[in-house]
Length: 469
Ligand code: ADP
Ligand code: ASP
Ligand code: MG
Image 1 (spheres, helix red, strand yellow):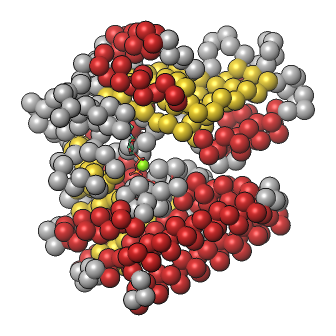
Image 2 (cartoon, protein in one colour; image 1 turned 90 degrees about the vertical axis):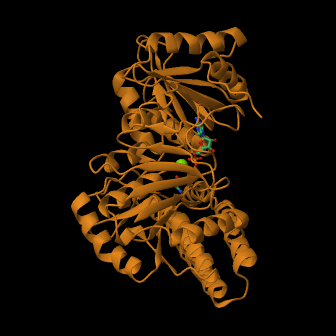
Image 3 (cartoon, rainbow, N blue to C red; image 1 turned 120 degrees about the vertical axis):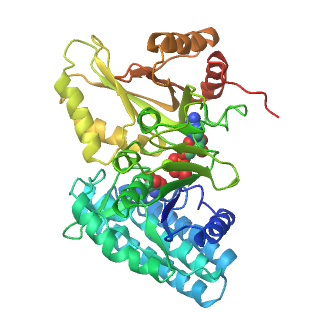
């Protein structure tokens, strides 16, 4: 049995969903023991849902209505283009409308309370995967592939750490083994929601942003899958984002440890928690391109071929913002730094990177662009009004992070020197830096406008460029 996971861009519009259905149809019979599919929300939907929940709590009802209308259109476009008036289309249409009515009621309750808890936010954020899994299953059925949408809230059992819940392995394995094999035995492809789960009592939780990769790994491990394949919009993990460096090369084979280092220091491509569940049983993980399915992609496995090429990689993430909180004098304390992080976490704001130097009186926090306004609100509420003396909060939008990750054995000092050398020659400002504990990776925050040049320069500096055909 193989687990396939399709990311947000792979199901971002009707054409992409068509490509996904084609891939599933092609592999379904070849996969010994069947195929289990895990799906993310359509691209941008989780961001939209989170924004709607925050707008509801702040009383911005027009914004909620606009987001709901956009979500309805985005999902109904899939029905219109791929399903039409057939029975599957009518049922899918009804399900989308029902889900969005339920969302509307939930948003109204949040507006009445004027407060959004992390628990409430998870219930709202879960709608994206609920809708995408139903749609994909309907599209598959329409194509003659027997498929059934399943919500992971009934399958993956977690603790109650909303927004970053941890799975309980034994209960999860039991539920998955009860629910999934009977479907596979009847030739049905289960289409399971990524990212979302529930506590043993049935309260909805989420596994963290980008968590559908983690869902696929959890399911693969629980069901002893032969392999887990993560389908995305690039040819695997490359030496750099191919959208920025056309000559970037795919890392064809990686060990679990190498892949984990890449995932921990790069925010996207692969969720950092997606490796660990697979290690114990040595289940291989592949990263493949939905839009170029013939490409072999990246294979992560216990014993890669000894003659494989081992290269450094640059993992970049755009669309971020940097917020600096601090004091103009010596009154900044570690407790204030801890308070900032705690309040952001409680407000459901993901902080992919932060840094504070030894003597500096401020903390640099990198947040995702869509979280910028909310993070600022939270910090102003906590630190404004003289609560911490004269706290200063500054923000810089449109920043990006660039992580340079060397393979094991890399001279970390040389790697960092090269990175700063390449940035320095162009005069690219370094806004914040964080170093990995292995010494083989460094993450640097730069203005977004300078990211592409920085990545290209550094890629060349590391000498991994190939002639682009
Ligand atoms: P998905 O929606 O499938 O989960 P993500 O957006 O999370 O996909 O991750 C894939 C994206 O990661 C690519 O589109 C690419 O822009 C970005 N990326 C950044 N650096 C790299 C790299 N070195 N190799 C591959 N992808 C990269
Ligand atoms: N939809 C979720 C997110 O946007 C999970 C995922 O895409 O993996 O974070
Ligand atoms: Mg992802």
